[in-house]
Length: 146
Image (cartoon, rainbow, N blue to C red; front, side, top):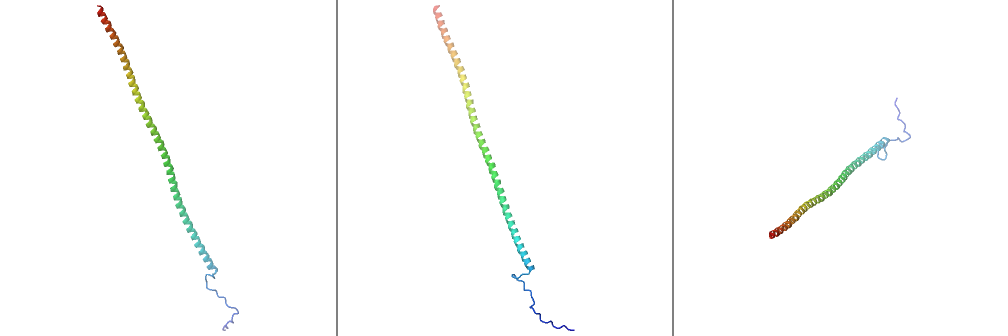
């Protein structure tokens, strides 16, 4: 029993076309979409990492600026304290000058008191001298009478 050749098929057989970019099978389309999606995800990830690194750099710069700002504020406070200390020093120097002037005045006062005492002693001596002169005159008169 041999098989007779089959009669010609009334329709053209459907052959599957070779895969191309314009005519992709469902599987190929899914792979391409997955690849595109994966590439897109990678790009988004890379962008996010890059933005993150940039933000971290900005944060570090901001922290540096804040640190410098705080140092400046501290320096300004120190400057104000130094100015206050300088004013206090000037006040102290002025007080020392006043104290020295007061001591000088006290010395002058003591010298004046000493001079007054000397003056009183001199007046007393003058009185004594006058009394002595009077006594001498009296003595001369007495001698004359004798």
